[in-house]
Length: 307
Image (tube, rainbow, N blue to C red; front, side, top):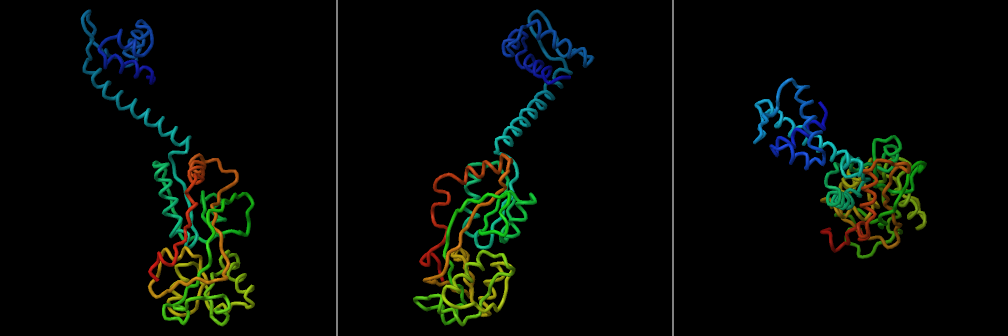
């Protein structure tokens, strides 16, 4: 049994008239009648009772009409799904966010995708540091990354800078600097620092650069695997930290954030494979490239945050 036979049969079953069914199908009536006879012969039973005045379904025909309606609807749904996937409007995309970027960029990115590509499913990996994202993009376990350049390796990857944010000071709420009106890097010369673990952190590089330009090397008191560990160490009074300004979007009890007049800035970039061919990923890149998606500053101002 071929799909065309089911379509021919359905047209006759719905119209109860071979002539009108042939017109709907844009085919000659004799050819339609022959196809129905072939279908009946294949199934071994009549599907219609034909008289000079009417065409009606046999019990077998009534059963086949219900089955044909279900089968043809499923085929059409499948075809639509294939077209949506080919056009990048359906599928699964795995996207990662580094540290504090999840607080500001994840809602922004997810809302754009939900609005423009509502049938896409997202697998979110939050608080994933840049080196791990680079590995995931290269080995194919991630499709998109929101990370902080520069990276240890960029071979085979493309980057689009989406934000630049200043480093801000994170201190315990009872620290002497928590209420200072103006803070510069030299004020941090004797402070113990909580830095990120590893040697490939873009934030660490910006912190070290800021300290070097102020004439000192920071004392590394503690190391943290991510922002979710770094801030509690600060709240405990075990050190201070210079963190991207977007951290202010998710304040932590016991931590105060202060502007630093001469601290460096850190960039945030969208990363993907240079040879990417997944239509869903390419559709997201197009959606996120629209004017206004990343133009507004992702960093809350001090007045927007209850410090």
